Image 1: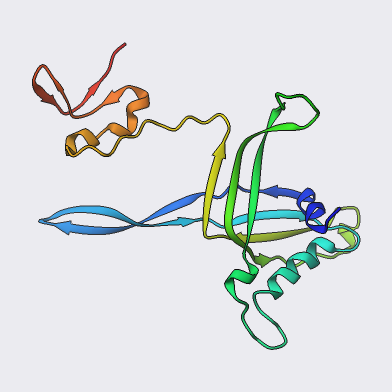
Image 2 (image 1 turned 180 degrees about the vertical axis):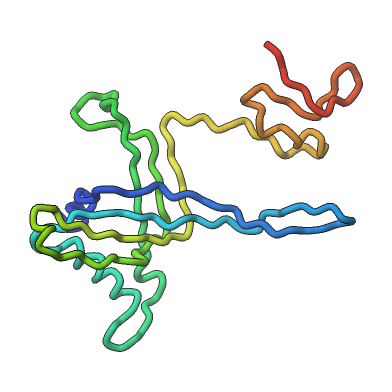
Length: 193
């Protein structure tokens, strides 16, 4: 087996990254609104079991050497050290086509990913009966999500009428905003079925 496969297998925990929208306030005629200007992803924290040969620890140290050479102080080219990481969210159900493997609910593809931080390894007499672990923090540029059972929300924000945009994000909950009822404009209404 390849070293990268055994390292992926030795991943104990990993988080699915969150995201944050950066906003900037804009004040027009004493009306203050916040507008989105950027999307920022959180870093990904992962914990890996470290084997007897410490291959997992050395793998991430070597990866970071592609970014910064300790001997010369040279920085590596960005395209030479970034990679792609895919995180699979497994289901407790088995695959539909049979077999013993679990099915995948969602896959999160981290594009232009690299290990930003490799934690120090703890040593001590009291840790002799524990499996050694290394924490790695990954940074990445963007993420794509592939979900097996997810149906996208019906979010329609392309109307030219600003009142139609007001509550359209809640359309799956049968909440409507700014539609005409009996020729008059209703600002808010909850559909009753």
